[in-house]
Image (cartoon, rainbow, N blue to C red; front, top):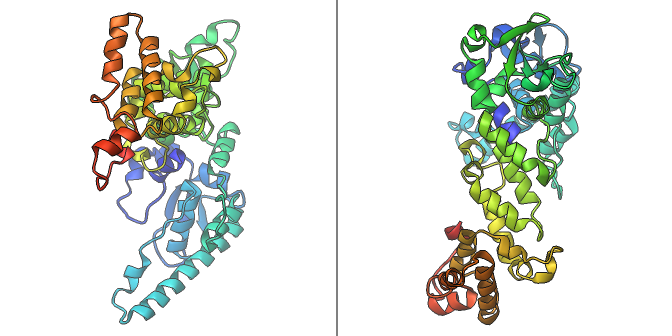
Length: 415
């Protein structure tokens, strides 16, 4: 989803005021002009992405599409973002008298648009045309079929079909007999600039042309970076659709790269991974990590609607499995998973009053938690007091006794 949000900024728009032009150095970018049959100006697109997604696209720099500009823009939205753009077509018929006639005309217009999208997708050999058809006809599936946007983009990058004017060499290439390694392919410069504040500063303006760290390789500029080659290679592949985090062992490196290179989409990817991989054995450690990393707590606004909230997922998970997390037998090492939780997070759970455990049992859990977190007895006792009523709502039993039943207390208030 984060990839879709990024590419949406590069998708050609109907408006003449196209902000994506600022991110694209069209002089160094292979392009193709798509001409509609309704007399509208031809649309300039990124040839590498279009051909990666549509292998039957006619060759040449000008392609006659034999469809309207609305159809063309609709398919480009799918090619770039893997989503459909439902225009407010009912406004086109706002002056038509009678709501029934207006609805009928809107439906007819949408059916015509959908038919045109499928015709053009078939002619160009769109790789995920079946998925597009499923979205258009509104199939009600248990799990919506995913398009192949990331897969197509990554394949094109690996095959060298998406290549900008920059290559990258790394600090460790001259160590251990690796000096003969070719530079890393930078890929789509506009995509790097969109996803990384570091690369945005580097690849915009005249920085690379004036920097002393720039060399050349096969006529292309090579930028030398003080960063391990393997890690940079993973990051560049992530920019072009690959997964960076495949296990918990990848989390520290992902966060380090996200911080250094300024990559909100990588923070978003870590968020998604954590929310999807919570278990009894790792939940407390992962929630501690989320709290300690500002990039995970405050997700970039561009991704808040398309990524999972790892902090909220951890909160709900601990509420649901609180009693199991507090058991000694769960952790093979003999420890109690809940006792690994940061004190501030334990306090949030108890302040919510949503822990569904009897008071007597919960008091014992809190006492053991305080002892585990504090080596000094006085500090442990002070912490125990902070984690019990009246300092916190404690559990559902106390909350129901203290708050009127008409009061609405939501989990969101404690996130």
